[in-house]
Length: 176
Image (cartoon, rainbow, N blue to C red; front, side, top):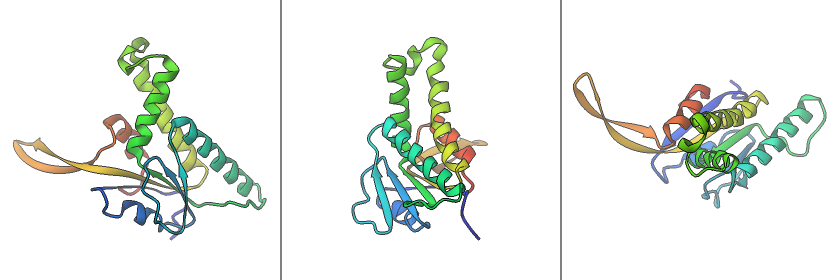
């Protein structure tokens, strides 16, 4: 089956091969919020150091997708967009909103609208990539925490992306 338009979340401990696995997806471009792609073959890494850089990269991807959809040939045609890591992407998105609002903490925004603004901005980023027809691969680190359910305690491994970011991504992904 074709993976076009599907979305994935890969999370796990550091250095277990998350990015290497993601790079095996067809015609991948890596939005590298975290450095670590130095020795990977078959993928174009795009270093991302700010949310503005992420938005610029997305804009170019959407432009390329439109060119392909209109039937014209494009020099760079990608099928898979890898976001490595969604943890850092969320932090940069939050900083972008804080700077835009002119505050240091989201709590300081009027009626705490900053939280909603971050969620909307983060969601829009991923939604637009997916709607353009790309396969989306999100990467996160993992942590294990103790959970108590029905009076029983057990360990649960979860992504390290902040809860609000995970809510956005978990609604989008087809495979976790």
